[in-house]
Length: 428
Ligand code: GDP
Ligand code: IMO
Ligand code: MG
Image (tube, rainbow, N blue to C red; front, side, top):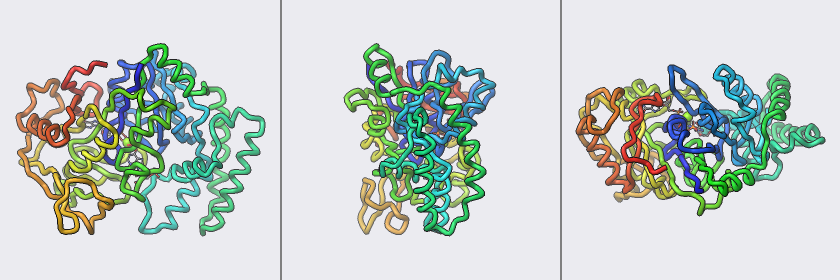
């Protein structure tokens, strides 16, 4: 069997959690492949709103395995809080949740290093979620990191102390008082490590290879979005992992020729949280309208999300890098109310008009060129089929499909599981 991948095409928060939850029934295994508690994936069903950070978004479906892959970084304390929040939903986590031994651990000192590094950057800060993501991936590539499998070793505490000592050395270069914070964080961290020992830790690549050979279907769940990718995002205002399709191979141990469908998910407009360039950002009432109507506040940090019009060159770029086979458009309901909608189709860049994403998308170099198309006023939140959709929405869908050259397979018209319209029968 093959693996399908679902990932974000913008700056994150496209609605990955909701759609993974909707698609879960069609799969046997949902596998997160990168990122960590910087992610916040929101699911809404049966009057419940639930935010997941590290745990894959298939966790509420009985009989499905949810794998935290080797490419993920885990903060034991945050992870155990997530587990506690699942208790009332009676999820059998020992059965439903599998953790790769090769996933890296976020130490309390990684979080502190993240905060110290951001504070030192001043106005140039990345706008990190301060979950220790950057320092943990740095230790991974620097070959210093601690992995989940290490907690099963006799000398785990010694390994921890060695890495903590390295971090103390690094922290001595910052003017950052951290001893109290560390003393507060450490006890809960070690308690959480004990709890993780009691869960199902596995050699996940082997598990997946076996499952695929047995004909099981896997959906790989991405975190963040392609424009936050460490290589292809708006560097340095990015996260520290490979958020693109290639990350599902390295983050799960799956070969590229195993991948079948790539679901690329995007909002009908654009948002970004944290610092960094955003060519189509709106600073006017239209931006405020999208932010308020779309409840655009971070699921992890609560920070307001910056809002802007859809950016076609950026979307095309993300589709190309990921090899997207099926598009998913989210939050169409939030776009109701505009007389006309603007769509960025090219950029004015260094005196010329270009249709691709250049090396730098810094505001000083780039100016979006817009086309204006009719909007719609109807409330879409009760819509359950395309035929009944306003003509202007159908035209918008066609317009985007034409520009990108990939079909839109799913349309989302509200946060709830049920507010999802399959536009073409997916042969899953
Ligand atoms: P993720 O990180 O990609 O999983 O997305 P987030 O959960 O961070 O942000 C998406 C937000 O939009 C959440 O609050 C969802 O409940 C909400 N949402 C998802 N799809 C829709 C939709 O079609 N319409 C509206 N109005 N809200 C949506
Ligand atoms: P989901 O999976 C939106 C952003 C941060 C910051 C930058 C680096 O919910 O879509 P980091 O903590 O990774 O060092 O932050 O990336 N960021 C996200 N923005 N959604 C996310 O995840 C994000 N994860 C990180 O705001 O700009
Ligand atoms: Mg999110």
